[in-house]
Amino acid sequence: MHLCLIPSHDESWGPSFNWRAAQRRNFIHFSAEADGVAACRSWAPSAPPCAPTQRTIPHTMSRVCCHLGFLLLAEVVLCTAATRFQDVLSNRRTPVASYKQLQGWSSDQNKWNENLYPFWEEDDPRWKDCWKGGRVTAKLVTDSPALVGSNVTFVVTLQFPKCQEEDNDGNIIYQRNCTPDSPASQDQYVYNWTEWIDSCGWENCTGNHSHNVFPDGRPFPHHPGWRRRNFVYLFHTFGQYYQTIGRSSAIFSVNTANITLGKHVMAVSIYRRGHSTYIPIARASAIYVVTEKIPIFVSMSQKHDRNISDSIFIKDSPITFDVKIHDPSYYLNNSAISYKWNFGDGSGLFVASSATTSHTYALQGNFTLNLTVQAIIPVPCRPVTPTPPLPTSAVMTEASSNSTSSATVETMEDNPDGGCHIYRYGYYTAGISIVEGILEVNIIQMTSIQMTESQAENSLVDFVVTCQGSLPTDVCTAVSDPTCQVSQGVVCDPIVITEECLLTVRRAFDKPGTYCINITLGDDTSQALASALISVNGGSSSGTTKGVFIFLGLLAVFAAVGAFVLYKRYKQYKPIERSARQAENQEGLSAYFSNFKAIFFPRSTERNPLLKTKPGIV
Image (tube, rainbow, N blue to C red; front, side, top):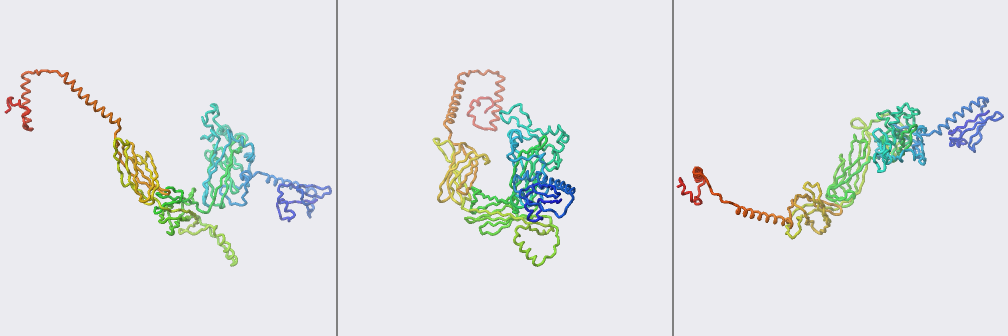
């Protein structure tokens, strides 16, 4: 008997066996011929015949070899047919050929437990019944772009159907009175996982002894509150996966030191807890970017600029440049950062250590702004390994090859303090336009207009305003309270000024008081304002007010005349009756006070001529 063993993916047998490398799922058929000569044939239709080996073995040994071959072949077939993480999480994306290991992540070639975590295609009808009350959606966001070496963070949030939410115990409940037609007898819970866990003691339920594991068989981490986290999140990127448990949202970060530069896709699959298995409920993906350039953004502002988004600014007015570095993981916190500016107007290069600077353009025109940000990042020094000297030809070849790829080599140098660091750079370029604009506005005079009774009731005030720079095309007056915080009205009018910037603005005030006045002059690209406090007096009285005062005055006169008439009519004559002793005492007191007044207040006594006849007065 002859035995023929055909490798399924070994190409060392020569070109005639190369076709078998692609036939991984073909079964090999062994048969024993009647004459004791064994032959093996592939199930492939056009397989070439097997060449007999040069060694003959007994018939019994051949049967043992055939059984061993069947066992090995069955193992290969089972390994090939087993579901892997790549099959479930890649979502038909092209697998990554080679990659570097991410810390805390695992290869997507690991086996996937499809019995505990079933896999459904996108068009599988079981998706319709995976959640009570509707379909759950997932939203995955990232803080990308990320500088290589920093951390990139992902946040996934589950959005439940209408009127459903998660409570403090991790259960999904119905919101009370969410809709007018909500039945009063509706069950509170959509999924009461707390009851499931408490009733079965988590580990003692039949068929649930292995329920708290991930698809690769690893147990859930037993951190505080882990039994109340009823969702399993499986992230996949760069040929690797990361698994965790959580509630209705999950957040995690991954270091980008071992991720190649460019755009990548982060995918996530979410499963919910079930009685016997975990049920898929949602999938999501997001694109993230890893770059070797520092992500920066520059905001520009100017005091009198009317529209900061049009990149048009005013001549002879400083522009403030504020640099924002996108570094959400604080990777550059301990780095030395410098900013090199070229404003494009021939003023030269400026190097600053602050992220905010200002520059004034003295000429009109279009200019190109260039900024280079340099970050010196301290890193641990790599161990120095001595290398043997290379031959001259090898050195020349290596130098020429390195010269073409020097742009992608990470630069590392020694620090003065004995450490090492690397350089990272960020670049920003923008075009800006410089034009004439309104630079300053002044209120030089405020005059209250006197009005007659026949004119309007409101008080009128004239404001004489001047400005510097270009001529304005519109004027706006904003009236507010004395603190200049609460606006009471804004009035805008177009104006035409052909020569000198001098104009009079008249505004009306409906009632007296103190007001804050802001007068703004503007044109197409710029605007400037001036503020002042003004006290406004009341205007002429209205006819109704005058009539009320006249009526009250006449009423007071009539009341006084009537009181006088009544007094004169009803007054009665009463004779003075007193005793002689009282008269004598009163006369003595009158004489005493008269002498006293004569001493301190001398005056003519012609008004009281009768006093001369009294005793004791000369």
